[in-house]
Amino acid sequence: MTNLFEDLIGQPLAVDLLKAALNRQRLAPAYLFAGPDGVGRRLAAVRFLEGVLGAGQQAERQRRRLEERNHPDLLWVEPTFQHQGRLLTREEAEEAGITRRTPPQLRLEQVRSISRFLARQPVEAERGMVVIEAVEAMPEAAANALLKTLEEPGHGLLILLSAAPERLLSTIRSRCQLIRFLRLAQADLNRVLEGCGAVAEHDPPELLAMAAGSPGALLEHRRQRAGLPEELTGRLASMRDQPMEALALARDVCEALDGEQQLWLINWWQQQLWARGAGDRPLQRLETLRRQLLSFVQPRLAWEVALLELTTGK
Image (cartoon, rainbow, N blue to C red; front, side, top):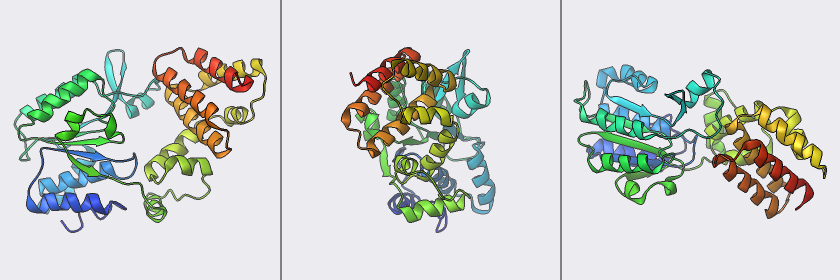
């Protein structure tokens, strides 16, 4: 148990709480691992479940099975996209080249599958184990179904991962033991990046600011930034009071980027504007654009109106 969490860097409070639960064998039915994306919540969940299994001589094998998510008593649930009657994770959607207009969601049928999973007899472990990623990404019906599962978890163990716990129903939060995860100090962030061979060498200031102490977020921002055409970001940074240019830029953004990339571009642009001291108005207008894209407003129209307003100052 001493070295179980040795690769979880920069989270001493979370480690102490999880170790105490394992050492005393006093496990809560449900845990809420709350904190920014990319600071070790998934790794902590795997290591904690490893401790729950108490693998002994089978420790290496159990660790591998948990990391690969193929343990028979583990159900790992991720938000999904709906495509032609199928639910696809983010990775599956990317591999299939499916255009993603809005972020993925945890869906009612996924939450119902959790109840069915916990109702069956475990194959090897003493209890069924469920990890739910981005648990805040649920519509109301799915949230209510999850609440019912938390009210009657049986002998199961649930770990909810959330970067925005304030968006969860208060009744869901109250049924979970809260484990807080913090943003990493710069030295810890560098240690994590070195460990995965991704040292922060010459990251632009806006990416470092967007990551805000999260190595996982920094890696994701690097990936998103690399996928953006330089020509588009250059045009955004040097927009002039030219309505036709604004309309052309709106067209090109919508043709070149899918929905998730457009949302990331808004984040990047807001950070650029904030760093330049552009004031509240353009930042708020981009926030309105974000809400419109998430509300199924026609993307090109939303971008056209936003860029016209930002270039003309109206």
